[in-house]
Image (cartoon, rainbow, N blue to C red; front, side, top):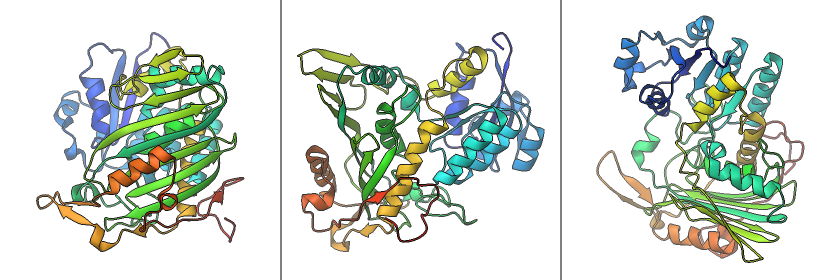
Length: 408
């Protein structure tokens, strides 16, 4: 297929779908592709609508009509979380490869359904955790796999991204456990905005280039300042099947912004990423230092062109369904360990900002979470009076969320 035109269909034109459209329509260095169809029930939200119309791209508002009509090499799915499984499976049944936005799905049983559909069709599915497609992360993972740093001991990440009321009102499923149709969403920092950070730690610890470490247990604490069904703050300790500790800390309920940072401890080295455009730096016990490009150095849509190259030239897909399954398994474990988020005491909560953009936040929370990150502790272990410990849950042979029965 190296010399053939790659045909692309798009599911979702608003939100992240516009990032893909920008890369396709405003990227003169890339050719050999054509958009053949799009599906969105509200296409008027798309700022590229006039250009799509000028290209005479059929835009359908019915998913049944879309999947009945499409003949495309690649379907890019940028739909709400709860629709990923259904739409990926439908595209596979039509013979298309799929690039599905993160996360793979809300619940692990849906990821397994997607894997079964892919296997039945012999197709390709990539999941859009963009750091997994970046050169810096892939080079770091190569050296971890080679044993250069010795055995991994612990990984940590911290992200503080304030989100105001417009974030939770932008659709009818933000902050929800299920949508109005009863489908699992589990929308939260762990499963949406900061999903990349949790997945990335699992990914770099995977035992093969396109794999992720598998979580064996999760101990989670979840908290909420906003009036939502899930949580806006999370601290989770994950133990992988290889015995490595992962600490994931993230919040939307601070007034302070802290872009993603991570650190890794190995038998013979430490790895630090200070965020933004900083390189990833590995300091080895023998005094040597290695640098890797920031995961932010690659464009977000490198994953799109990786999929095109996979179709045209057989390039490897670094993050597929199996690699992304570990993240979904962790998210399900977080909800099993902490089935109801703790509410920050009302006197701790402040609100600021103009009408429609009011930010609900907890003064001092950013400092508390930074301390947890530095000390590799959960909030309850740091002695915060608002924090409450939860039980660890085993994820051995975990196949369905929620787990039935009393086992924890």
